[in-house]
Figure: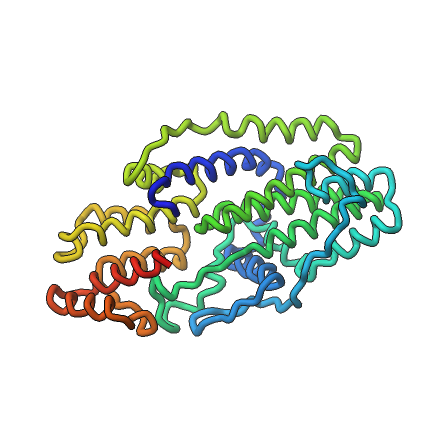
Length: 366
């Protein structure tokens, strides 16, 4: 998060999220059969087809083991479209009047994602606990803010493109109900990921929602349901008007406004919390004598109101423990003259605040 202009990032991500969120009412309805951890595991399985992560001692591997998958390159000439339209939406519209052999071959290759079943499984969940599915229990291995794993779910966006190609094939094969169901699944997965506590994954979610929006609109048009298409677009247009207007602010007030704004994606709010913690490192009194009540109030709010699952609260606790000096950095980060000097200062005043703040500053400068 850019601490100098946090309100700009919050406004950009929040406004785009609100716009696309208007399509969430058209998602697949959750059926309650998929737990948040099950959904998290499904998303991790999908993401692993894009790029493998070497798990640490505190991580589980996804339960489904799929091969790596790269989306095929589709020539623009196969599905001509306006610049703002996804190629899969153009393919769905083209499928209504029949596909050429080359178009069908391209769609079959694009629709052959190995984790299609996990995508549909994640779509049936109401929410996802990705870190609950990833972390291997509270007592297995050390967990602190420096070793808490970051998971990119960019590969889920690639799978959404494949799902949209499947929709085009179903329209071509005269299966409008299947096509509509799979288009709604794209919206469902995007809506679930928009609620994850990571701004990068929120951005991937918005791309998935946009893909799903275009896919479902194209299905409605391709199957002669223009009124449903208009209702879908109306929901997107009117969604931002239903949210309160924000007054941009700068500096710490902007960060606090972002943290406490429940209309923003949780990833944006969690990043604001992370940035707010840094102010303790800029306050000599807190570094010398310990964090103040305002710092602990922010951490308590993030733990109780922004984090949703125990796995997410573990991150909040780890971040707060680092800044308050209750936990030393891992040995791998403790080298160098600056860190040695910070340890000497901690030896005088007690705790690990100098060392953790020095490490935070070093990592932020990279």
